[in-house]
Image (cartoon, rainbow, N blue to C red; front, top):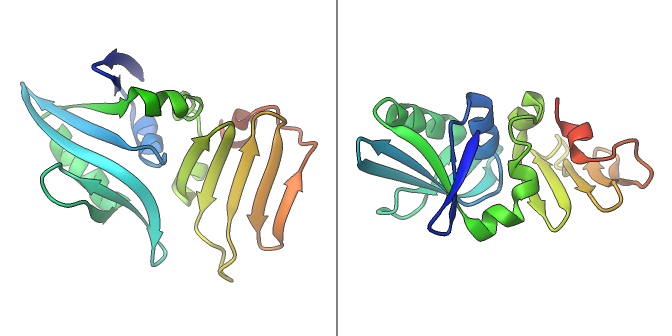
Length: 176
């Protein structure tokens, strides 16, 4: 994945399939831009969520009101638009700066983590991996704190915190 800065945006391009799919799962507002020989089409990705047990994303084409679609629907839409245009992704520079620690590792995150999560996020030194709730309706979430490498997770046995983990960084925990 390569990037440049343009007009207040970080523009990502030359993404491989793994980087693109991982980035789609990041709780980052972004715009997918498809350039078909100077004719541009856009898809704004607004929020990742879980609805009735299905991983979904709010998106908009800038004309219609945002709609909620599945990742399968989004991937199909991207494939159609990529068949005639070149994809780049625009993220507001201030958002890209806030989420930099997550953006730089998207190509390294384990496929199993990306496939199973509802979304990945990064805020103020804390990485979040939010999964579907467990069968009993209990949350399935993991938080990693960069400052001290502490891990807080919620699972079938309730919340647990690990203060002396063997993980020095998030890459040790969720990346290949």
